[in-house]
Length: 248
Ligand code: NAP
Image (tube, rainbow, N blue to C red):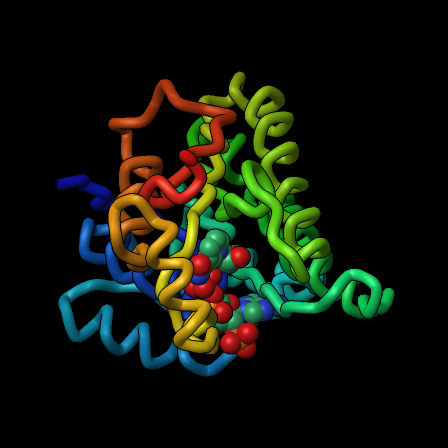
């Protein structure tokens, strides 16, 4: 549906779940995809992409490390020549009651979820500015934009930060024809959320008006739209994709 031939995309957290599906869909639409993750799973995802006739590369990287990210963006530019699309997807959501939350718990979530977005965006922007085009898509959460979730105060703060980051950066880089948008998913079935017990899983499903958990491809479809030229007049927005979970 969207033609991304000739485009180069970076997807963080591409080893599983939402990031993996985003990477597969971008590659299926013709983009060369740089798969970034802290785990080795990206090498299997790259094999899958190549097996389907797509192209890309896989580089292990901790998004919270500026040195790592700087090195990786240099490698992507060296091997693929340009960067058109950045999907900041890597994120963690370790449940912890606020009164038991340590400084280390707080720092880890903020470092990966929010500083990781700063690191990759800051590293790719000079190239996008030189190209006078670019699409930056940040995966936030309804927990940062619409509703509260117990035991996820650090996570909510990090995701709310992403939404503010998105709005202000969009304003700053619009002059270079760069679009910056956020997506706030509701509950999506991924290896990360599969750890929930069945009772909580069913309780959440019953709270979703469309009657099912979201799937990674639901989010990936929206990413494709925001990565394509069909969304050229949309910037600075936070788009909620939650099956109606936050409507009541
Ligand atoms: P997931 O299944 O846990 O996958 C995330 C991937 O990112 C994993 O491969 C993970 O590796 C990797 N990662 C973790 N820390 C990293 C780091 N420092 N550097 C590079 N990669 C790292 O997550 P998901 O459920 O697909 O969620 C993806 C994004 O969507 C996250 O930002 C999440 O907050 C957001 N989101 C998810 C939902 C949902 O219901 N699933 C809802 C709203 C928003 P490890 O396995 O080693 O951690």
